[in-house]
Amino acid sequence: SGLLKRLPPDLAPIRFESHIHGQKALDGLSHISEADFPDLILLDLSMPVMDGHTFLRHYAERYANNHPETKIVVLTSSLLKE
Image: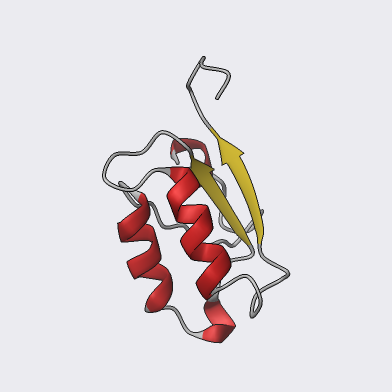
């Protein structure tokens, strides 16, 4: 988030939101207009409350069909193979 926030506005005019866990991210998506739906979601698999795997299941059920152009990039700091 620090790197994205430091981008010069003329280089990449982006809107950036950060959520502490998957449930807050889903709640945030439910309040976004169709026109403002994100092009990219960076997803941590190791979040508290609702992890990234659970977020992906809920996202697929609610949003994937209506927003096939949205890309999800999965990031994690876990060293576990799972």
